[in-house]
Amino acid sequence: MMMNILKRYRMFLFLLIVNALIIVFIPDVGLKTINITWNNTLEMLSLIPPIFIMLGLLDVWVQRETLVRFMGEKSGIVGIVIAFLMGSAAAGPLYGAFPVAGVLLKKGAKLSNILIFIGAWSTTKIPLLLFEASSVGWKFMLTRFLIDIPGIIIIAFVIEKLMNKDEKALIYENALSL
Amino acid sequence: MFNKILYLVASLLLILSFIKDKNKTKTALEKAWKAFENILPQFLSILIIIGIMLSIITPETISRLIGEKSGWTGMLIAGAIGSITLIPAFIAFPLAAALIKSGAGTMQIAVLISTLMMVGIVTMPVEIKYFGRKATILRNSMAFIFSFIAAIVIGWVL
Image (cartoon, rainbow over all chains, first blue to last red):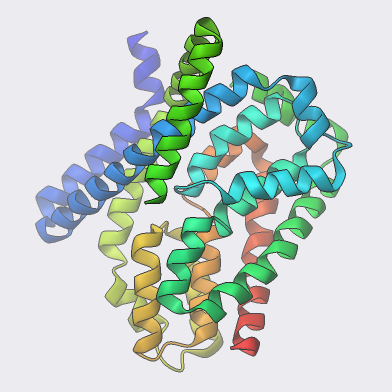
């Protein structure tokens, strides 16, 4: 039990030691690391509860058959649209999207749709777009938004094509154990 | 503001779920916790890496590297910074605005923003955990190339 925890957190513990050394030997950089890590931790903690609660609810309430119908192999344009909407309605950094993607994999969503969801989460999140427009201008934001949509879809489809059957099966199998 | 909406929606759904089925709601919360605990070691590592990185690669360093007339080299540097670092949006966009004001090129900024959003070298271990090595590498490298295409279009439109 204890060993298991140590093993899972070994990278984190190693980084913690590195950070402690920075604080001791380069105090001015070290101070900054504390400050930045603290702020990011607060941001993460503020976003994680609602995202993971919705992930849990999705896992329990949406049946596999339903999800396959709307986002599975034969979901077509509907699946793409749902993937975009889900990703765009999200908040928080991209790494928050992966656990949600894990549930989608488990429920049998099509790989390209999950990749579209990841793409939308990374670049077309609504709060992000508003913030972007106010800092670098509407024209910049809209141009990026319009080119990102086809970009995300193309990337998702190309990856789906480049992965062979076995490789895809392995991803879905792996998701069940997560 | 958006966080509040997110909390509101999540709470409403949770209450609705609780009214419909207590046990299922309990399972949902257990699953939520399990999914979180499962990824927690990686999340914590990412937080520390970002902290160390952003203390070394400061906004001042970035503006020196992709400042005025940095051209293609500037774009490549912007792409590298954007791919390696993970700057939260509330720092990235004001930084981008400041960089534009101080004379950085639109295309360099576009590459920086696109790669920041789409390419995540630091988060690759998490991504591999869910998607495997091949899909992760494919997604990140394609997103990297795409960021330059997007930047060229933005540079051409603006």
